[in-house]
Image (cartoon, rainbow, N blue to C red; front, side, top):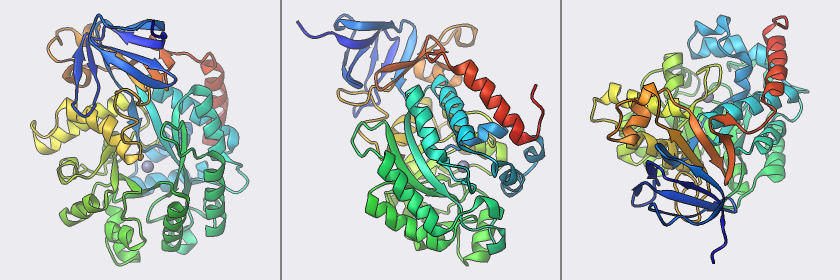
Length: 458
Ligand SMILES: [Zn+2]
């Protein structure tokens, strides 16, 4: 007799695999052992399992993947002096506050951020941590500690800023570092935490912040270091019209030309936002294989504009989703980002420009491409990572949605995960975080957040 699986999710109203054949199995089941998908099939052929989750009435999908975030920003959410501004004004208001973060702040922000993401159906997230004030400690190892505690699959990125106001950049002096410090820390963190194996729970990428906060020398040196260490590269690019103006004034070229000049045009890179590339630049990105982290909520909240997702996809540019920083979007639900990608795609290109299945594909397969995890994350097939979300499609908000559960998932709602399973472990169980520590972490997070914002404790 076959050995029992560790976990079986069965009776799915629909199991969406996102595999090469885009199989969708009505009434399907999926079994998991050793953190990997073991098998799947139609009702009646389920194996024995240590734990069985009954997904009756539910949609089962691969876990959603977050390709752009700044988790520490959940310490300064909806902060009034910053809420009125465009990107540059918003950043300039918040940099001095972020100059006071430390390891405890980074750990608590990450813990709460990962919990929020898991509740929203996210099973893999990156984080772009680019503020490293002097004496703040090891902010990235603090995040990795939180990811391990909660069981989140995590792509940490060693962000950096080296061009402060005195050198014509946007950030103040106290949050930037010199190139030698940045490169040495980048190499140390890759050595300490990066797992290059196919089913890794922690990887590390290198991520200078943006054209207006980093020097070209650092961009070039970081690309060379990433090549030597064989890790990925990430940055913000072409987010805002001010960035076009800045690059033309300072570098004498457009952001994408600058990106190419400093040696980043490659399939090792994925970039956040990318709202303002022209047609020739989109074609180049496709040629390079450079991915885009589409941030639909953030682009709306900051008022940055409508990214050319249809053109990217048609050209073959990998596109994933990002919730972006918790104080630009002010929320971190990948369900909501997927819905917003659907809505913005249709707003920009008409009702035929984006459907729910394509939005879901961006949130899963596209995210895996951006993070260099194709074939392991973002799809459910024997041997892939057992990162699975069970979505309830019940209650008043789903009444009447009987014909197509995938369209229903994103057109109806709001919704959150009923079960979030990461590497075969149940992290969200019947809508609740499994970890008992959430109240403690929330209390500690509030104390740090109030201190940063200059508010008294409640
Ligand atoms: Zn960002």
